[in-house]
Image 1 (cartoon, rainbow, N blue to C red):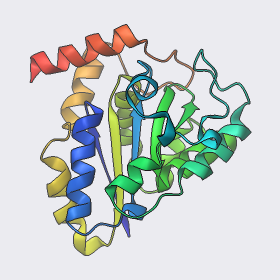
Image 2: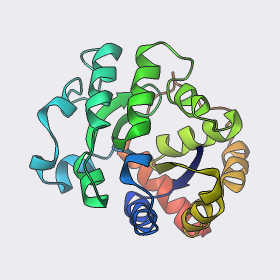
Image 3: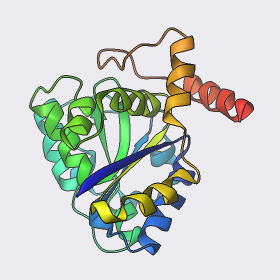
Image 4: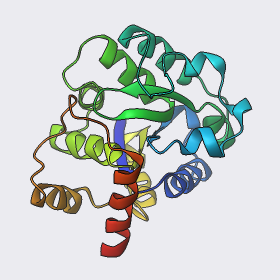
Length: 215
């Protein structure tokens, strides 16, 4: 099995990509989604019944992890459990806090890895989780920064024979990670910093508008 990750500028585009993967025969148990929630879209736009109580533990109203990293790891393990189909994957959405990213909404197998990386003290948390499953360190930093700036990360683990097909599906609407890295670097960015302050809702709106204008 190999891991394929792609960054999307908004959650809805990422969800469509997840649907395309499922229709192509990729099991939802092999797909993960990790979306920025600094602007509170999940709380305001999604039915409260979708958010299971165990998943929201550890996230305070100020979007801080009030129970600490160990609680985040436990939460991530719960979020990782999903049922069949794309609707099932999305029904497994839950909130947690990741250093440097702030509040995120996530579901799928990678989420448990990410939460455990935070709890285990791995450098960068999400960077450690991504590199652990085979993502290059350079790409992992761009993916993490992309989520920090309001993006959504979709990750699939597939047999090597399916890699080209899955990459083609995700590449239809994904961010070009190399081009995005160049844009970040032009503004002075170098690497994802887990100690950096998460983006505010206003900063994320401006970031998304900038990329829409460029596109």
